[in-house]
Image (cartoon, one colour):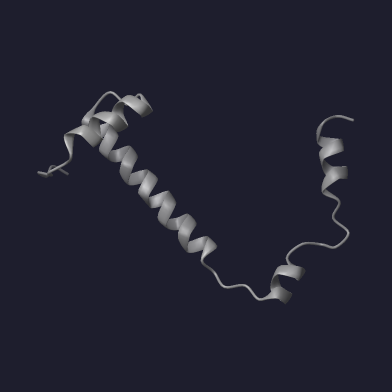
Length: 74
């Protein structure tokens, strides 16, 4: 979709330089995708969980160190 936008040129240039993106269109698309991910993450982590829900979310027998040991090949 074509549209006219007023964008802060300095900010756009900084984003393009920092990200390595070469076109303005790609930079705007990247920014929109980043904003979408941030909004989804915010929505996910803003969920209200009770203490009991948090406790039951992980198996008490789960041993993270044992899992790491197996994953490292040891």
